[in-house]
Length: 469
Image 1 (tube, rainbow, N blue to C red):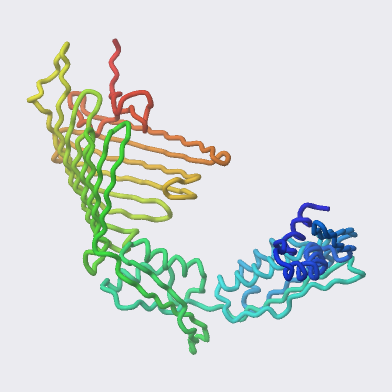
Image 2: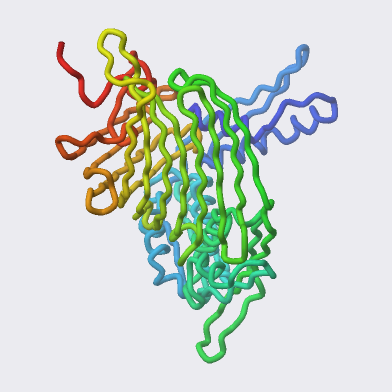
């Protein structure tokens, strides 16, 4: 007996009885349940014998399978506006039931379900299944499948109605991914909810279909959307503690204000402390044409860091525009960067006194492109690819202490080879062009070493120049 048939019989029989009453019902229905399990997989001519053995109690079911019922005709008819719908045409072209296949009720039910689900996804809310049956013929040797679905007219999106919320109407309307009069599509309906939630302005987003409408002049059927919004918490705080071999012990604190005013402004402040690399960042964001896809950002940063032979501290103020489109993020920016650093003391060959510091200031325009594609958990993805590209520079005659041009690219790739086996790769390339006699600020140079770079070397201990001995 095929394993699939045996598994289906056990599924139809259900759990074993525990009481006398359950045992009687189990025995009484065993033959019918077994027959139903076999017919579901196309075996309409099986011989079934049920016998009972007591002391200990046993139910023995003897089955002799004969030839299964094969499919002769598959007739799936779509009428109404859906008959010209590309999605329905694609569904009919991919039906996995064909003449000569063994009859399988599960595949038949799945086909019906796919037709009805697609109709709801595409906005055929008045559709009906006019006919749906399996006809067994010719002494159980063959069967015909008939499905007739009449879709009726396809609905279009109507107006989107929001409850009263302290946010500019143009910001809310920019989050609607469709126009009034567009054909209804459940993907666009769910995208509306996702876009609203992604702003983090709202604690809850609840979107439902309102009462259906008919546009008399156009004779179009519309389905309006009613959206209920509740505000998010005014302030969000997070605190963290951790340890990494690179930066050692670390404390962090974050403060976010999801919605500052009716214009959609928001801010995020993040402070991290570790003995080697304390940092602070403040970002103030102003939506332009879209709250998440077109943003003007003001950023203030401060950071201390250690490199191969020096310690540095910098301050940075930046203004930039972030535009997101087709999974790509592009940021065009300009920043003022001021940095001072001091070299470590070398007893055998002193290079500079601790009391002396190098200090430099830049005005840096630049552009960054980034794209991230991943699947699985956001914290622990099963697959993904991230790419980041940056071009920036400064010029002596444009407010900077010296001139440079910098190119930088980073790539991260993750794939799952087998359960509990993942391949994680990283690559990084960079180039800097600078005046021969100028010295670039350390945070703008390239260093390697540490658990996120070249393992076995201390954190950022490999400088951009390695002198021969």
